[in-house]
Length: 440
Image 1 (cartoon, rainbow, N blue to C red):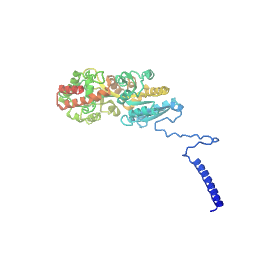
Image 2: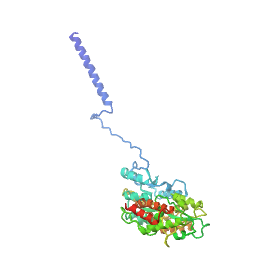
Image 3: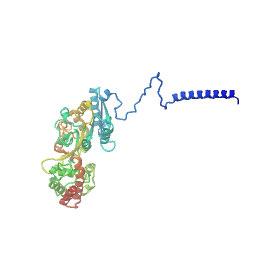
């Protein structure tokens, strides 16, 4: 190959390389995943971020003004305003009335299970830690779950808004169940108390004292002896003056009150006022059924069980007492406010005031079959025959003990109750066993 040919080949090779490199530069400029600096004459592009879909119940995608005007209310299923019951319709109307009076506000109702995973407390705990923006403005909690939430620091004290709500003269149980360690963290919403039911065609004068029931010709009283929380023996112990001490790390029972309560159960079992078959009863639904099926003359039930059905052939009364002072225990629901922005609290207080309105509470509790939390509300009931009896029950009711008491003492008293009904041991031996178990 001569020199001229070599120069020609070299020129062609150089030309091919220039063309190839120019093409690669253009290709690189068009590839989106290669970092590069744009030419000075071109503006730097700005990314447009589209937010992810907002989870159910969250208002974080709303403009700030709309967030402030939105109130989220968490309710247990029993208070679902869309379930079609008369009580639900009244609650729905009350919420609609609030919206009509405050057109700038929107109420979002979320229904959550009363307990367990995904329930009210579980959701409240999770949201407080990981997503405070989805916390409700207010919620209604069962008493036991409310106590847990208050102890975990999830709720705001409400002492400063009591004057705004003005619930009237509260029953003692309603006062009790809204405070934890001396601080009030909720407003009472509705109650449920233990009572006695019977068929008046069979009973002319029901017993007002336990000793009137425990007679040689005693008639059977049904109650769930195997109920795991030991609520009835707890009631007997407290009605006899028993307490639990002020130190939550150590429970101190009064030995005399404990022995007297077990003796009462033992005496009742001996005359068949508390039949042997009660050891198979673990729920108050079973004692309610025992009365309706005429397996028992009297039954210990919740007022709600009677009020929801209102059978024509059954009457409600206060439970017998050790003396002339009626005594019972009550459970219930409270209205509480999670730890939230102070900017929205005034709006939440307005809705709380609307839900605790005396006239609404009178109509709603009567329709729902629940015990009102105040005398003023109860006096608004149309069924004055029943409300008169409930007034005595409400005045005599005290809140169920704190969770730690029920957890530690309830099962021990349940075991003692079963021992008395089975006549396995003496009331003194059973009392000593309970005191020893608590001291270990």
